[in-house]
Length: 217
Image (tube, rainbow, N blue to C red; front, side, top):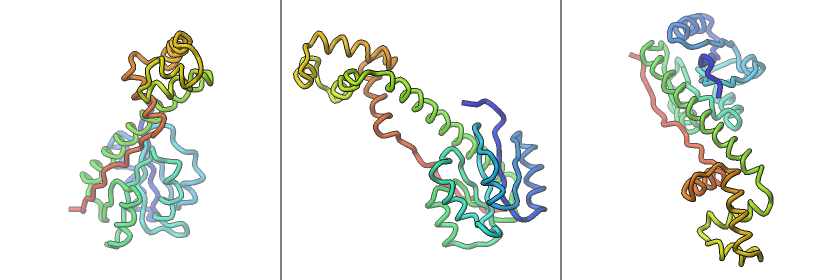
């Protein structure tokens, strides 16, 4: 995972808001990337480091909710903080249900915004770390032979070597040999370690961030 300075993307059609947020983000120790429309944002290369998105609810063309829907599938590492000058409850609910981590109302309170960004950046870091670990596990599993994968799948289900051998039609000694190679390739220190790896590969849990809402003071 990259250790570069976290990036805070801003999409807002109000130039005064953009300028104010750019200055505040720099003071907070993050790198701002500022856009006036959703299309400008989508044309920019995606971040590979920890990041978040400050997104205006009302935009010309593709609005905030549409952009949120557009990027939801492939940017789970980018928490979204919505900002809006309008108290639109149905849209707020829709945004939060779709995974937004915060919803702030204009005029923005600096402390509330900085806290929201910190929360989002930490979530992004955690997500990127989990994605990196999962990618490494998948790479290790790809190194297994078809037989070693079969042994792994049966072993993590709780079958003993003898039972695995019966299932696969091979001797217990052969199972032990495959199991040893498989444990080595997966870099599993114990059976419990292997089970945890198998669960992550099977389920690929992606927890959603806890939604919070701040009102400007």
